[in-house]
Length: 148
Image (tube, one colour):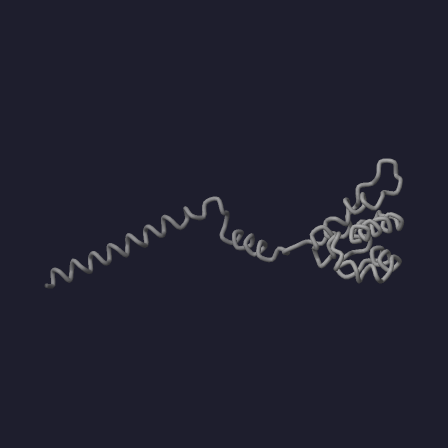
């Protein structure tokens, strides 16, 4: 009986020693290519605190080659379509008569004023600061025309 107890303890001790040696040998190998653990932790922290989105302060519409004012359809395609085609950020979709009816009822001047100065999530001039008032007005008229 004492012999069996002695061999069980010996097997347990050998198992623990083998486990410690394996962990000591494998742990450093798992860090190869990752740099120090301090750098890994810093990189992970940087990844977690990155913003979910970014704000684009100004978006330039494609200028016309001859510097003439662009028509409403061209301005819509270059600037407005990004939100008004999809309804992003609550923008009324182009051609949605129900969504546009109350806005059209406020009058063309109010719509143009909102487009020039921005309203709710829409930035001034749709984010394209290079648009002239005439180009903004043409784009508004184009959008209103799609909703009628």
